[in-house]
Image 1 (cartoon, one colour):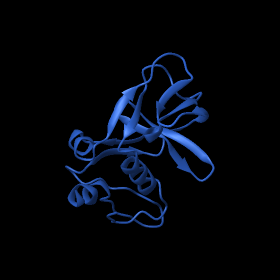
Image 2 (image 1 turned 180 degrees about the vertical axis):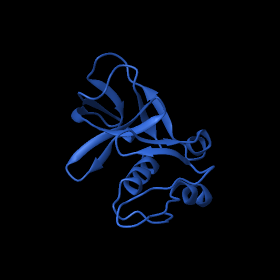
Image 3 (image 1 turned 60 degrees about the horizontal axis):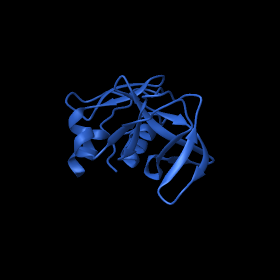
Image 4 (image 1 turned 120 degrees about the horizontal axis):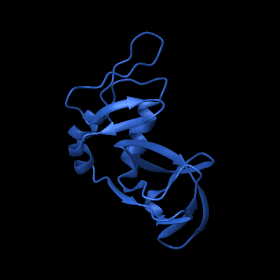
Length: 137
């Protein structure tokens, strides 16, 4: 497991501008600030990341495990065309195991991460950090 996490966060910085160089055969296969990142199928499998499609035009009911809280914002990780990105959502209601969410950025049949969300958050934070370095969490 540690080996996969090390692969997940393999980066190099050049100069004063943050540049991410992806390791060939690593867990992260593509990254742009605009589109998010792509993970290899092997990484998704090994890290236990699961996605589930949302249905209808919303609001949507998702497991609480899908939520990511960052300071005063709440979001979910969406996978579209193999690109994974954080989408901000508004929580409308919740039960013991689920939350009802709404977002202008989600559409019917979008895939939402329902497990392994912590690994997606760590990856996203490291890739978008201005202080990216070679690290393993």
